[in-house]
Image (cartoon, rainbow, N blue to C red):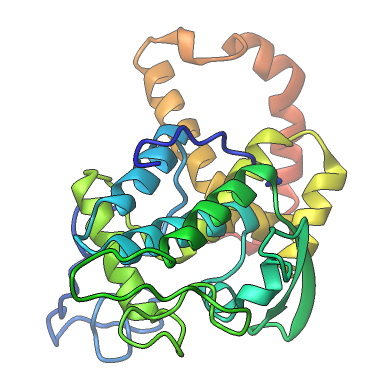
Length: 289
């Protein structure tokens, strides 16, 4: 399983830690959201994995990141679980074996989860791809993985992803963040990676695969408890990606590379620009200079 070919089913960055620094005392911070009240720059938000290859590589890297076989399998499976369910880390950490496994240790097709942040209980499907990963994962606990480590088969009341030091507790948030960042650094990812990357990756690929399906978009918005579709798009990193493409394409166009334009400048002006400018002019009183 070390080089498993992940058939990513959505229904189913790091280069280094973002360094914090203190800005000069004589510089006004005001209400700048990029800084804390003490003048320390906030860490960048975690980003989704926007390439399928990066998702596959992250999974396989987590499988080999430590000499402890159980820890590697747990970390990789937790990541796989996260990108297939879109759940927050704390919700995943609270899941017990009985929540996803039947009494005969076959995997359920659906499971209920309590969202700690929202206080809501939601039902998620367990895709076939994820069922296979879970079955393989739970088998690791039945075997002796080192001379000093005895087999510890997981029981129904155990946490699905237990702490390595204490099986009666779930895996810790800070430890898992460090694991993901270490894997991201090893993969030379150029963006910030964290536990929210799993949830954002789920959202990103749902949107990417269903961009023209308004029912899917509304379902995702409701699933994430967002008040607007714009919030969901921004959360998933789609808005930022589109902004980057828009600015880069404009720069190329202005420098003479018209291949970046989907329509000729004349066609765009004649059919759309006047209408867009009219709409924008209605709000110009609220715009900043």
